[in-house]
Length: 293
Ligand code: SF4
Image 1 (cartoon, rainbow, N blue to C red):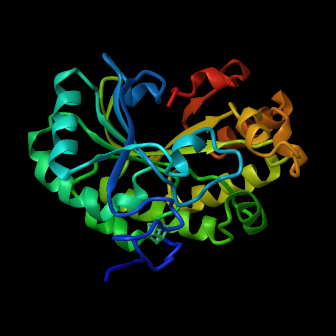
Image 2: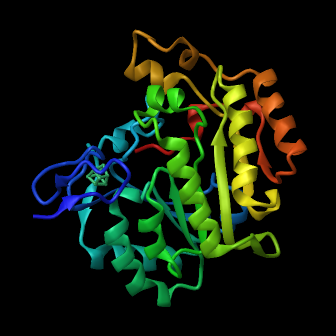
Image 3: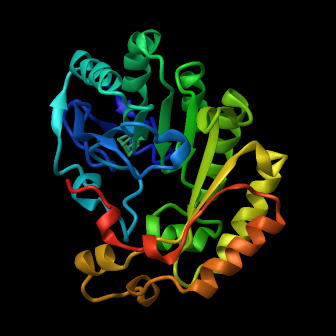
């Protein structure tokens, strides 16, 4: 029996027969494969990013925009060889990268798959994660991933416990980002195209601007020079998904959009701290940017 401790949940589930906190068994479940045009422009050129959305998630944020798949309810079971074939098909379709979305709970499996397929790829592999993953497990991905794209969601333990059931979120994600940066280093470009590096995504949430500012200050301490990472500071929080799954609206702040004041105050601090990257405007705050599953 192999009890899973692959991610920081360490829920010790026997995934041969049961689903873990992440909502999936050992079977590799893929919810969608597509050429994705809405990722950050430096990884999304030509035909788009070759996105592979895995079923399940080890966070289960209350406001998840992909909850149809993060709960592990939808997905096609694939063998390693079948997923490798799909990766090669994306490459042949002109994908600008292979974008592994929410891969953390399949890390051990993906290490095997990437070892086999990586020599046949001439495009970067992107690890597009929640950031809630173990640094020592990520270490095994050395040489297999070119671009890490973790979220960094919260600084406060109270907030991460309330919204994502993970009071240790920040310390875990901070160590994960440190490991990612040690593997791939500062961003390297070919023209507008990112070849390797770390893109840190942060979604500013309603009523959380002070937490966002604290988080950015800690992030700068973690990465040394702010330009060692690319910051993607997102404003597109949309309450639709939270309201649909929680009609009683227990957390009032999650039932409204972000204000311009909230986003701009975080943006100003990001600029003062010397971060560079992608900054958004309110027009992207729409559920229409979420792929249909
Ligand atoms: S990957 Fe899933 S089963 Fe394994 S420890 Fe994390 S939540 Fe539990």
